[in-house]
Image 1 (cartoon, helix red, strand yellow):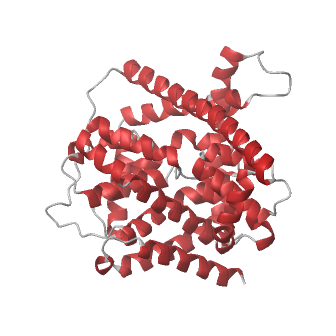
Image 2 (image 1 turned 135 degrees about the vertical axis):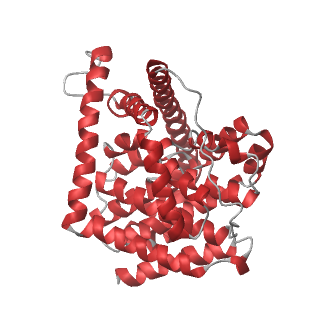
Length: 392
């Protein structure tokens, strides 16, 4: 039965993206088929084999160790603030982002990350039928984040047609940055985080190839990675540490605001209609939860969490998921994979602002197709969760 539901889920994603395509005649189906097969194979390896268990365990243990080191710094500054045996969310989940950001800066400075990103991107370009720039950007987005990635390709931003610009922005919204992966792993099972990271990479290409098909000519298929102005090691380190701290503070502020606003709106809806706003959204998203593989009896609750992710952000939704202890392991796994992306309304402003900071005209272009970006990124999350559901 779950295989039939998964096929239905993939078909729903295809039909919805096909309906929104800006040039249906230009869709190339062979790369799509190859990438869907790759998604299924990778999901099987990661969720259903000893090799996948070993890889995920190794990845998770690395982050667990890094978070232990991060805790040393947090405890040095904030030790004693928490009650014994307790650790506030900001200290235990968000502040370690500062250390992970610093580590990414070191790997960038030593040219290790640019080398890895560039050559993984070149390999991907052979599979997805897209340009080198798009493939590089997808890998870089999954490591650097949805704002920082555009800095590395800023030499080409101003010269890109809107079709290629859309694909770059869609990749940034469909993935998550490595600096906050450790935070996710403290809120949901690490195997779902890793699985989502891998599946979203290909899912972004699949959805963009349907919604926004185009052909990159050989003359246009160039990649110019911007080398930042050379800094001393400690200048760079200080900058990345402050960037990580800004991310932690920003996420904390967003959580305070969104959690409070959702509580207010839930109270208003409950007083007037006798049903909370999240429950209402749950009914709207329930069909999508079902085609992803969630049992119908849990579809409304799962849909509510999915909607929370889109109208607020993934952190709020992950916190909400943790409160639903009655959900089955299969539902938790499927919803967890869905939550691991930046597909929410606030990301439209973040991405448009990042591009506008580099090129004002292109930033305005991004703002105009912002809702289509969110639509595509949400379809990526649905597709990844559907494929993962085959093996849960």
